[in-house]
Amino acid sequence: MKVVAFAGFSGSGKTTLVERLIPALKLRGRRVSVVKHAHHKFDIDHPGKDTWRHREAGAFEVVAASDRRLALVREFERPARLTVHHLIAELYDGVDWVLVEGFKESNLLKIEVWRASSRQTALYPDDDFIVAIATDSPAELPETTLRPVLDLNDPDAVAQWLEDNGDRFDYDARKYE
Image (cartoon, rainbow, N blue to C red; front, side):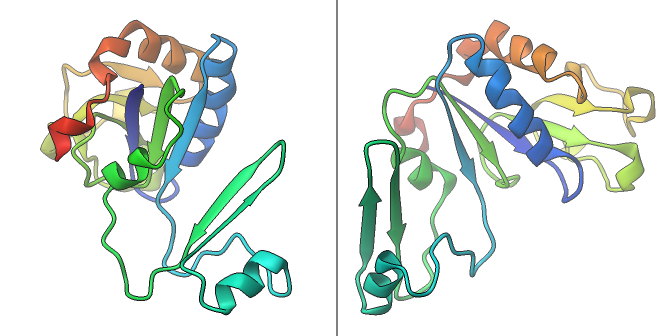
């Protein structure tokens, strides 16, 4: 499996880029998974539903499955410090690409998503794990770079760049132990 992270500040367009990359990679015959960092109290379950009732009763894990979908909810008694590598380990083994969003501090290879209009600082000058920058304003990058600069509004070109450089993104969990 190949793993690439998308780094950037809130509002930079990470979610939109990832959302648009999924079908672009699928058109190339790739199976794609996403790992997304969420806020502390996010929930995918709803009060009154069977799985919610099981969690409320104290179950550590609840797995709900049908012939079309599987969902696992794990309830930690105390805050857990999961790394992105823990989450990648939970994924199905038959995936071609894992797109990671929201772990900008991780030691994964990353594409920075940067917009001049966001008025945020760029991460690439200080992050050696950033291997490319996706932007809608390349002329306004705060520092010159030898990294590839990708068009944020052209997910097909970003997908092609990923495919062309795929060997760089081969994931070996043992490197991160």
